[in-house]
Amino acid sequence: MARVRRCRLPGCHAMVELPDHYCKQHHEHEAEYLASRQRWARSHAKQYSHKYNTVTRNRSDDKQQQYNFYRTRQWSHLRQQVLDRDHYLCQYCKQQGRLTPAKTVDHIVPIEFDDRLKASVDNLAVICGACHRIKTDWEKSYYGTGQGNELKQVPEVNDIEKMTCFKC
Image (cartoon, rainbow, N blue to C red; front, side):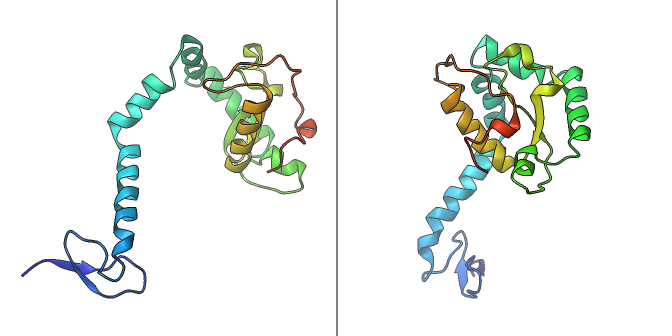
């Protein structure tokens, strides 16, 4: 007798023979499900994360020094100081009248643009994930940061209140 399990589609109680995950009626979801499992396995594989951390992130000497800074005791103290100062609240959301809890500390002026500001508490702010993604995209277009981009000669925007160019 073949081993069976229920169809993975919520609400469907049809039985499916292993190794399938969906019944004949919902079989179109099988490829999508298997692809999502492969993506998850790849992102959680030690070999994949090792390659990302050692090759992709450290693609140049500048990047290697930049990421090594985040492993120092100085950074951990600065980060904690900023989290305490900002009460674990996203400062970008706060400017728009929302209170969003966050644990990420971000450089207002990216250190890729101005390396001298990397240890300055005045250049650090707490930011939530949604704002961080939007701000990173804005930095790529404004400063020219990021892989494959050329840094632009533009004035630094070092005040969160003046950063109305992007909306969270």
